[in-house]
Image (cartoon, rainbow, N blue to C red):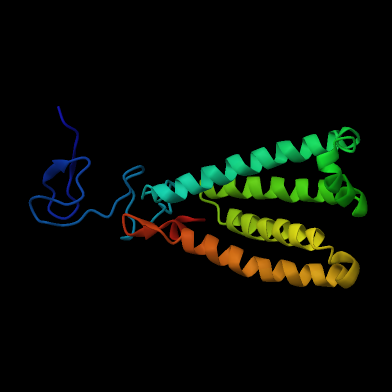
Length: 197
């Protein structure tokens, strides 16, 4: 036996999950969870706080976010190994440049490790539909990119902290722009950006 409900307009029985009355053609504006009256096109019921519209993202965005999580996890593991094995790396001829960079700027490896963890958490937040993840990834990637460029080219001695901040700003603009453009891909006519909270 199928569950039924009464149409609030004409009083005739219709299926419980019906969106429109088959007798009077009235659309039902009720929450499917708590059955309270709601306005059209709401994403969240104001009474029971349940999500009325299932969020979906484009397949490429899902792939890209998981790829970002995997890359940041791998980079975090490598940085932890670098921090623990600095003494061993000094004895490897091909990696002397790396230990020289780490010695030139004390705390650089721990700083980049911290920023990398922030990027990883940002990707995970984006997977959970949280807009704060966008800012964590965009800012974190910009800091990592600018730090890499800055110290690889030995600009620190010439321009100092101010030069690094300017470079970070110039790295942020394309990073945030590319990330924002990717999040504009649509699934069922709704972009991922619109679904972020």
